[in-house]
Length: 153
Image: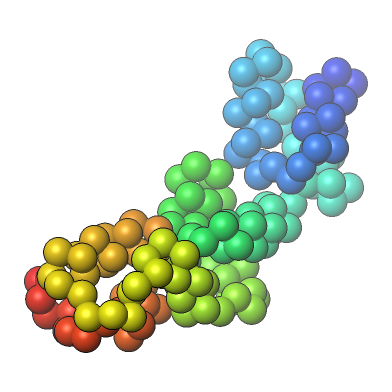
């Protein structure tokens, strides 16, 4: 491991948390050898300066605060950040986030009249928005104005 590779990785981590996958990609972009990358990551993890578990917990809280649901966050962590499914599931079990409350806040912000009776077109719009933001139907369906979910299937 070169001092340059280690310094580069520490410099990245001094700004924010990164997943192992993100650091690996950034180091590959800078043309560090695979051996340098492996050695650097091993040393960072040994010193507990880089932890996918800690990154996952922080990312989960940050995205939930921004109004995203569990499905969207899980997808981002797995596909974009390279986090193992086991790590994601473990972090989700340990977190104390009330997804229904977040869904209600998102509904109130995006659709202020969500409690009023909605026609089918508006209901579909609300459902699409909420599902695309990663919420389960159980998190928001009861809050939307009169009607049943059967209208959409």
